[in-house]
Image (cartoon, rainbow, N blue to C red; front, side):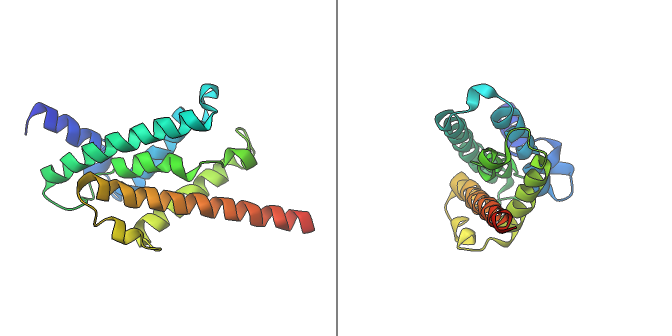
Length: 171
């Protein structure tokens, strides 16, 4: 494999996380939470929707290309070692969550943990037609099912928030 190929595979697998760790998708998701916290949550300069979605879109497009190349390297459809897809999808889980939790909310960790658990559930079980998205070719098929799982997880977090707010209103 060429030097560039090794770099691409290293990025697609997030180095040792995808190649050596058990449950690599969970490790990729946890790394994606860190990506969210460092790039999206903790920077005051990224408080606009346009910048949030712009950075997320750029990351997704790069991931589609890199994951597609890595898939050819591994000669397998959506190889388990390739976890860049989970990494770039995780910030989508938390779109709008700060509006009801706040940047320094006391329960922020619980919302993050809930988002991770929901994402892993939707990514593994693949309900609501998410599984069929994997049939798309190359890197698009690798990444798009994770984006759908992230969108479902985001919706679930918002539904839970609305339910809790409703309970508080009547309590």
